[in-house]
Image (cartoon, rainbow, N blue to C red):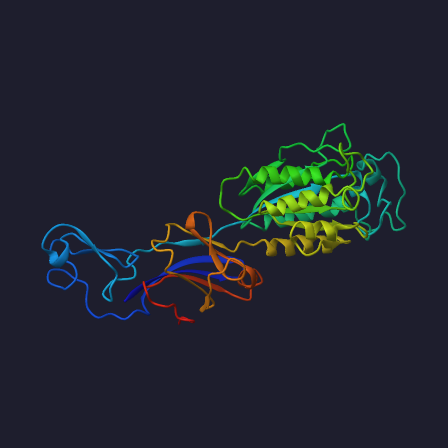
Length: 391
């Protein structure tokens, strides 16, 4: 019997889609064919379907009418090919532009230069002990190249950008409902330009920013996996109702943690980068958003690495088929030639509209970490069990 194999080869960050049509697996007792076989008929022969059923133009024995014969040992598993490709995730970068982002990335409450004091819009401030040296870097001057490098080198991610607090706002705790850059492909230069031209001011209304990002992501109709990447240098300080500056919004008012929980419940895990030596209780915030802990960054190199690590974690484990599988009960998925069980927690599951296959749990981890290099999606034979391994 013939079996259609749809294979997506993964090699590092490069994805190559291939199709292999091969004989494999099912036994055959006869030949499908033209004028005189026991199945089919003379009037044009049978039409082969991927689900193994046979529609004969002449019905039984080829002598008239139209009919469909149940799958038999003579049925062919597939005669149609379809490409498959890895689907890029949507990631909304929610970026803190509060005044303290002008502080040194290695120290709190001090600046690397007088220009940073001016840039912070704080009016005054204290210079760090190593101010003016190459070892002193402000948080924002580290953010700019880290963001640019990440979005430029992540063509397999659809990025968007949301600042908080909202630029040009007169209120300390204000976040607009619009995104500075909406999710899209090939928008690295737009995001980089926004970050490089940004100014710093105001406070840290994290809950409002997360809620705005979540509301926006829910409006997207694509089936791609979606994430929020929050980069901030401190605990949210716009808690209460109405939000008021200086109110802890994690342990006292819980607005930020509630917003992270809501994002995760909507299907958008929240990854958190804590910029600076003492970013506060961001572990609680990350856990509320469905991720284990925040990523610390108290140096420019650490910040670049944090972005890179998160980019790897959100790498898509969704593989899109150009056609809906003809028989959803005959899909077999293999990871490095080993069968993956259908399991929404720790195996594979169908994506939206049953036009994609999603790897979950440890199966996804093996792909994103590079432990596994080949994903193969097979249309199987009706009634035949999948082999545990394939050649």
